[in-house]
Image (cartoon, rainbow, N blue to C red; front, side, top):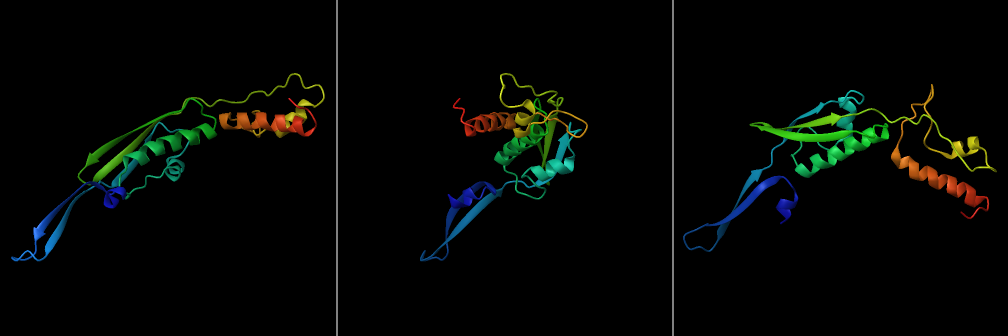
Length: 173
């Protein structure tokens, strides 16, 4: 069990061989089939994020033992990196090609267009100025100095920040 948990081997078999004619001792022989190593990483379709930045983001590295589950996690990491940059329609897939030296993992990225926050508007705020509420937000409108990239993860935290602001001033709901 514990050799398999290392995730270095595709298969492990054991056999017991006699050590001497009296069979007073034995030889345990382990035969392993190693998983291939990662010999290449490629990125296709990435125009807005450099291959270097993508390589820094993923866990698979050249020379590592190839583990399929890491490939799926890395697809998710790439997707999340693009989401942080406002690319809400990004699609990421990957494929593995094998040769005598190891595997090459190719990540195919369809970036889509970035989702930009063009405007943030508030309605119903009669006591607190919109400018004050905007100051509470992590999301920003696009401007000369701001990209205004929409990040869905900030949407809920911004909503909570506004609720907290009102609750701290005695408003219940």
